[in-house]
Amino acid sequence: MKLYSTRNPKHIVSLQEAVFKGLADDGGLYLPTEIPVFEADFFKQIHQMHLQEIYLEVAKKWIGSAVPETELRKIIKRVFYFDIPIVQIHDNIFTLELFHGPTLAFKDVGAGFMAGLMAYFIKDQNKEINIVVATSGDTGSAVAAGFYDVPGINVFILYPKGKVSPLQEKQLTTWGKNIKAVEVEGTFDDCQALAKKLLSDRALNTQINISSANSINIARLIPQSFYYFSSYADLKLFGNSFAYSVPSGNFGNLTAGLLAKKMGLPIDFFIAATNVNDVFPNYLQTGTYTPKPSVETISNAMDVGNPSNFERMMDLYPEFEKLKQNIKSKHYTDDATRVIIKEVFEKYSYTMDPHGAVGYLALRDKIKELGVEVGVFLETAHPAKFKSVLDSTLNTSIEVPERLNVFDSKPKVAIPIRNNYDEIVQIIKVVNGI
Ligand SMILES: *Cc1c(COP(=O)(O)O)cnc(C)c1O
Image (cartoon, rainbow, N blue to C red):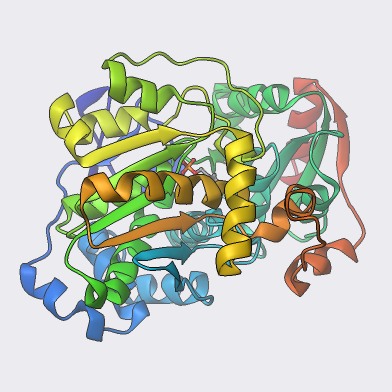
C-alpha cells in the first residue's frame, strides 16, 4: 500500500510513514495511490461470511503486503471484540450501532486499529513512541482505550481543565500504565496548540519519537470502512438500493464510506447529516467552500467549522456534479434534534443519541426523494454518554451501562500544568527518562 499527499500527488509514502506522520509535511492528508476494487462475486456471497472474515478481506485489500495477514488477523480480533449490530427502527429504516466499544463511541474502532498498526510497526524499532493527543473529551478516551497497555507506546492526553464533563474526565484520567492525562490550565485550542508545537519541534523529535493520533490519520479511516461492508452483508436481503446517513463533523466516517463505495460496495447514496455547523451542506448548495468558526450544539462531536477530511473528499470527487449526485446533505437545529429524539422514543421505543438523531432526521427527510429501498443511519455514540440531554428531552432518567460506571469508581490521576510549552516538554522527557 502506497499513499500520496492531497497537496502533492508526487509526495508518496509507505503505510508505516503515513501512520506515524498522520499529516504530510506539506499539510496534506494521505490517501491511497490506488483504491483496490472487489470483484462482483465478493458481494454475492458476502452475507455468508463471518464478520471478522469480512473485516480481514477488506483490510487485506487495502493494506496488501505492508502488514502480514497473521498480524492483521490479530489486530482485528483485538479491536473488534464487540458487536456492530444493525437494528431496524421502523419500515425500511435501520441503524448501525457503532457504540458498543470500550468508550461507547465509534472512535473506538479507528483508535484501536491505529494502535494495533503502530504497535506492529514499532516492533522492529528500538525507540519508544510518544503519542500526543489534544482532546475536548471523546477522542482522548478512545485513544486511551486503543493504546492502553500497548508495549513501546506512551500516550499523553492533553485536556482543558474544567472544560470536559465529569464522566469524560474520568474516562481520560483513570487508565494508568502507559496513559498519562495532562490537565492543562487553558482551552481546547490551547491544548491543540501545545500538541502541534510538540509534533513540529525538530530538536525534541531528534531525541524522542512523537506522533499524533488525531482523526486525520489514515489508520483510522481503514477500519471505519469495514463496517460499511459488514452492514451491507446484513442488509442486502432487505432490498437492492441503499442510502447511508452519516452524522458528520470532520467527515472521517463519511470519507471511510466513500472509500468503501470506491472499492465496489454498492451503496447508492450517502447523506451527510450535520447540526447547525453547516459548512458542507452549504458547499453542496452553492459550490463554494466557506469554513467558519464552530457553534456549540448538543451534538458536540460534530461542532466543526472546517472539516479536516474535506480535502480527501475533494480528491475522491474531483467533479462537483458527481459529488452532488452521490452525496446529499442537510443540517438540523438542536430543537429539531430534541423533537425527533422524543418522537422516535415514543413511537418506536428506540433511544437515539443527539448525533445519531441528526443522522435519522436527514435520512427520513431524504429517503423518499432518493427512492432507495433501504436506509441506514449511523449511531455514533451510546445515548448514555449524553445523559443530561436525553433526560431533559425525554423527562426520564435513562440507564447508564455498567461499562461507563466502571470509570466513575476509579480515582482521577492527572498531571496539572499551566498553558506552558516547557512544562509539557518536561513531563514527556521525564517519562522517556531523559
Ligand atoms: C467524532 C464524532 C462524530 C463525527 O465524526 P466525523 O468522522 O468527525 O465526521 C459524530 N458522532 C460522534 C458521537 C462522534 O464522536
